[in-house]
Length: 598
Image (tube, rainbow, N blue to C red; front, side, top):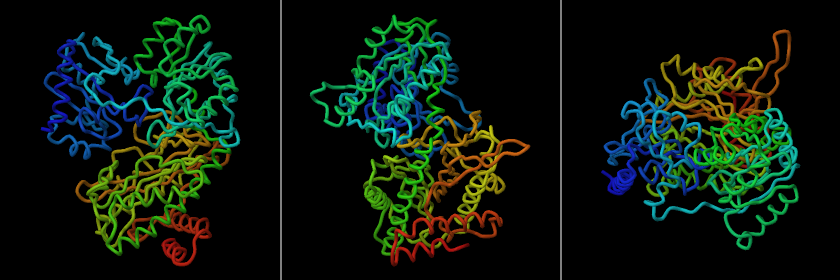
């Protein structure tokens, strides 16, 4: 058993005994419901050693368990080995959720302790048969070197850069509040705050966010963001604060939320909050200050408005994928030469790709940690490439690279699975069937009002017919110089009633993963757009934004239909036409050969 994590869990059990708690729930998020938390809130990793982005821990007197989904099963088995933490599988038939598991283990009224800052109000409502003990920052008493709340420089974006001013966005939100007969809204989701105020930061790795709360009234706006004295702030942040204050935004301390809410008690008689992102501790605070009857619970309208990109954002995405495609083609050309020379491993490849993106004007960082995985390592959908001891990329089999960039004009996400030489028949079958599904979804035409869950099967059908499948979703929304994952839309088997709308930017990424052998994922990002109207209604289709060739060397042509081959040939020809003017000599000839018709 891992002595480090064993000792940490035993220290937590001592805390449980002193508090008289029957169970403790530790989540993998932060006070704002973020998918990717800052280091301070990587509590699941600290207590268990599990590094995946999605996972919750339950500790009782005689059991410690990790709940995570299909993307992380292989990774969790590896990272939890010897730790004494059991894996509980989610998104599988017969899954048992944390509330259900606790209900089977403990009687009504059992005492369940949570760090309410890192549990949503909505999640706690599912534990209504237990006595909830809220212990904010619970692990701080055990975590002696726990990182501080981050504070990074803040930049503002102009209307010309994002297509809509912060004033217009706030007025739109106030119109929504009027329709709900509300006088204020507390916004706690970080990407919603960044979008509303047209601000960006880097408080969380790969996500251009600023850890903060935002309180919006009929006329006034309070941003609870400052974590230090004004004298200690960098000049860019001070300039940003001055611009915001000129637009009527009051800059407040992050820790002053309770005082700020209390000061506005008489002004706000009905306050709107989203229970899916509002944390439990702050939710109790709002209820205490304003009273339960003054709270209006509902889904934030910002999520949907943010997901439908305006013309400036769409143009930015096109520019981002053009520049990103140049960098990725340079990388694949470099990689092929390096592998032939026998001199490259996964980590070196990952660093090279990042360095090429960094040459692009407007680059602000990667949009997530590169997944650079050769052979069997690619069977982990969210493989973490080790800096030391990463696998050498050999001149045979498949290499998978899933990566993206943050640019001031857009956010990218693209996956290419690349044959490095000879491949087995199984590798080629899987490669072709996954590609077939990606192409079929790319060609989809569907009526207005269709949700992603209604067309998910288009990407899976080629695999299903061969009795194969993948466990993750097929597509997720993407932010504009924001989080690489956003909602409300997605393309997955789980029911989501949100229709796909013109202007939404969504990934298209089916895959297949064979433990110990290989992993394959083909990912492009698509823009939902109008496809005409007739007596049967309004029609929508996808425009592929991603620009990087799809390697045909591992394709079994007879597994593709005529339309799929035509789509593939058109796509590769389009890539060459768009990108080749930026290349010369050997590089240009290489791309010409890679994009020849199948």
